[in-house]
Length: 229
Image (cartoon, rainbow, N blue to C red; front, side, top):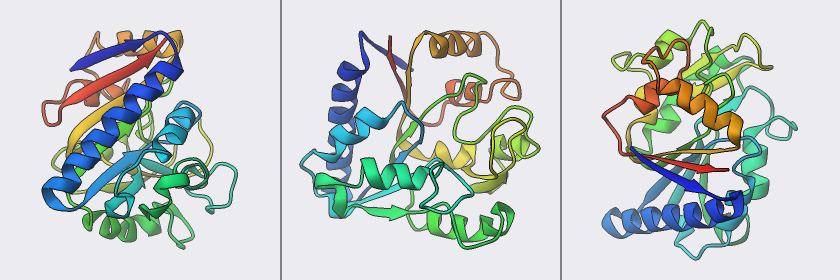
């Protein structure tokens, strides 16, 4: 695990954008296609804008989300809306996008369609995850009924419906084995509160308490942590 610390978010965003472009470009050169999994929230906004401006064969890149709220794509809480308005612009407008929200009435009924869509991608080039103050990542929330399934490496599942105990909206989340099916895994966080959660997570291996521990403790995918003070 590599831990990269930055004095501010601007410095982090620049280096992370350069790193991700290099990974995507290398995969495009090697096999003619690349894929990027991103997360929602405020933290990646500056990174999204920088990444969108990078010169790359974006038509060969597939972008999707680690998780999505079960709301329409024009809803203010939609991660898809965030990505379309802040990443899939400028040079990156040509990238393909796989939505984790279907026309199904609820997330449970949308699981099969989302899993089929993800199956078309294969191994991800790079997965970028955030982390909540409660230690959740993607929509793998502590206390959620679906958490055990989401963390089960032998479940055979790639996407599951999640109803958080505290946060609003049903969610669709990639499972741990699907998130780890990547050439590179990156945790992107900022602020002292997130550093404290990260330190607490490193003190035990109980992923049910802090699901981010499942990412930190795994030996499947190379992991880097980008943290801005």
